[in-house]
Length: 178
Image (cartoon, rainbow, N blue to C red):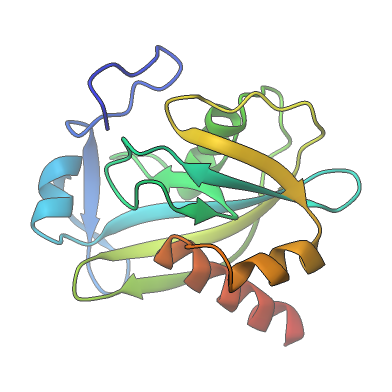
């Protein structure tokens, strides 16, 4: 993340993360930058935000993001800090990235291990209702809109999506069909 972060977003490459094993048990702690550089497994949250018309908040990440800069995402979220619960991180991240306060607690849906040659993290997927207007952080989000599921489905093949978000969304669609 850039050094010129706003006071609303104090997260940085120096923040401490819990490092977890293949069963999501804490085995240590590391700075965020070290966890990313050394491919240490940590925790993340994905929050699907829907408005009253059931449209999904979609955005393009800024070029200054530490991971997956300038790509599109259908989730807000991020890393879970050391000692922080998934639920607390989901609410914090949703309020920070959407630029709103007083959201209801996001509803946890399922967890999965995101594991590629470059990245590995335990992920928990949530959903939350968020009524516009939203005021996304300029440091985090370059563009945003609320899209219907049909509009989002059309854009999946057209836009370049963050790979972990695309995987989480695919798993969400499968989970809903079960």
